[in-house]
Image (cartoon, helix red, strand yellow):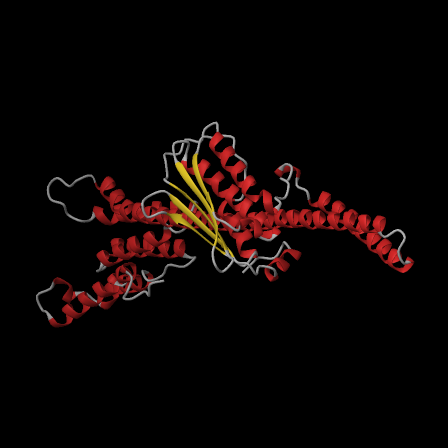
Amino acid sequence: MRARTGVRPRHVVRVLPALVVAGFLVTGLFVDSVWWRSTTVLQWAPAIASAPLALYSGRFCLLVVLLQVALLLVVDTTGGAGSEVVQLALLINLFALTERRGRELIVGTVGATIATVLNLIDVPFGQAPPPLGPVGACVVAAPVLLGLHQRALRDAAAQAEQRVQETMLRAELERRQAASSERAAISRELHDLVAHHVASIVLRVGVARHVAADTDPRIRAVLDDVHTTATTALEDLRRLVSVLRDPERGPVAPLPDPAELIESLNDLVRRTRQAGLTVSAEFGPGLSTLDSVRRLAVLRIAQEALTNAIKHAGRDAAARLKVSLVPTRAVVIEVADNGGRADTSGLQVPGGHGLVGMRERVELLGGSLHAGPAVGGGWRLTAVLPENSGPEISGLGNSGEEHG
């Protein structure tokens, strides 16, 4: 925030009556030719009392305006000096009164108008004086309209700032909700993955029990215990997965086996092409050696990135999907489009959480995600998933926490 330097213009205006009074008094002391040299201090008393009142802008502005009205009427009826000072101070206090709403402003404006018109009546305007009523109304209307305009600008600025704050808060809440929902989705998928492996363990142990039926009874007892424990764990996992299942997201796609990852990605490319987006795909060697968690992440990120391309780039755009395994065993997912003109009316594309969900998924695996406009136009997304991503998955134990 910029530092405030200098004095505000409104503060300078408020001291003008005091400066005018001081100017009259000083010139009256040292200049013999001025007409007010012959006046007395008593005649200047209303003006001297009015000048400091112009500095006030608190909650009793109406009372101060009425005091200024009374001082102006006193000057007008007694023929005192400095009516210009009192008139100026009255207008300054009337400007401050525009901060108040309702009857206070109306009462102050009516009182100031009456006093101003009465003050102008005694001023000689020549043989044909102009209509003093409209003149007095215009004199009073100037600070009132200026103050109301300033208040309207201030209210508009406050409302705009409030809307900005509400928009930022809404965006932050939506981001957190999307991140939490994405964590829940990852938890469901990981529970499916674990259940899949546990089911495989139960099957293998069952085969081992059948093959080792005539072996040592102690070995058979151990196999029976392992089979019972694994079966119980599998039932618990299936109940947990059924509880975690979100009916609004529809059925969860089957987990890709190592040999089926490329086939699943090709199927995703085919579905995207059917939606109207031209897609070229390139898959590097070694993707079948990825662990289950990263295989699932690759498929979900590619699906969400191509969905975003359909939504935002449009039917006439072209996209490129590239998945490769670098020497450090990190997998890199790249999706780029040429930013065709978006016309997504009638497109049936699955919903998701966009960049927020992808970033949440990537960061939970200890990776990084970069998305933004491409150099030659369009949009480019790059996600990197390192090989050692196990410790970060522990954060899924509490999906309500914010990942830092």
